[in-house]
Image (cartoon, rainbow, N blue to C red; front, top):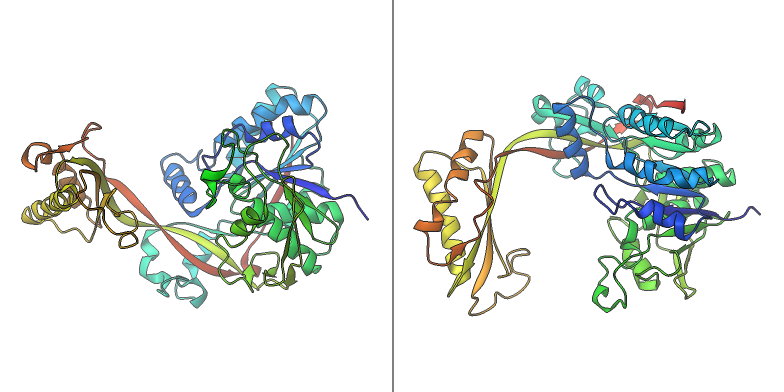
Length: 453
């Protein structure tokens, strides 16, 4: 039996704590791999906007700083390997920036592996009426937004990550790779599993699913967050994966947060869809027979994952231009605050309409009066203050430009108690919307390369 592989996660999303990777190694030098997950639909949209303005961008620049922060550990002999999807829309540019940092510090023994080829935009555009390319949520044909498509990226699995590790990569940068797969790849490499060892792959996939969101599994956003004794420095998670696919979730000693049966179970059901068929590029996983055992001292064991062959298709995250948007906030103070807030919002929309502009979508939220999740809570009686958030969207930019000009006048022409307008006229911004669909695996060409510092 091989020793368990210790895979930590130091990034749950683009914008997570930048010092997490260095802290993990400082507190637990025996970590074998650190994964960093930067990509979500919203982050891909931001990267698409960036790359449209500047072709040299489109990746998570924060990752370059993470690499810089780990150089002292490598210089002291650390063997930790880093796996990330920070490459986003532009893995090659991200790689080049990391190479420059490493070369400057004389880290000539390190190698960077790159996995690209997830860009399938040209493939989708060649067959717009392919039924696989219809929107998975609405059922609409891709042909309805073909002229607005900006990007389309398929979700790769962990196979090429394992291959790059076998080739000697110390850092692996990918584009749109499925979140759990950046954990599956190193587990397969470490144990020498076959890609039809489905139960073992299922276990590693569940481990990857649990740690992919960083400190969520160690108590972040937990339903009992307020009861945690310490919150100042949440420990990021570590998965100790065993050869049979079972694993233990833990965190570095002397860090805040908690790894317990309840934090693990809360994360298990986070964003999984059908628990009998959690679909990934590597394996289909059933969660139904999972056994969660609290071993105390911030150690929870998970076993019993069942895997079957993955589908012949891969999921695609496509992004298209969907018009323009504008949003603004105003503070509403005094008697009947919610009523005044709603009246202010309706007045804004009425003035836009009277000027001859139409807004295809509008939204009113009186935050503090139950407006964030409407009808979930009863509106407080005798409410004396709230924050009004008013937003609109339309295909025509000029409609939103007029809307943005009608916010400030409410400070003097609205009811008494309107305040908080200090950041100037709200900006009109483009909308980049999400289009999920499928694609045939055999149409993709995975681009794998290895770069010496």
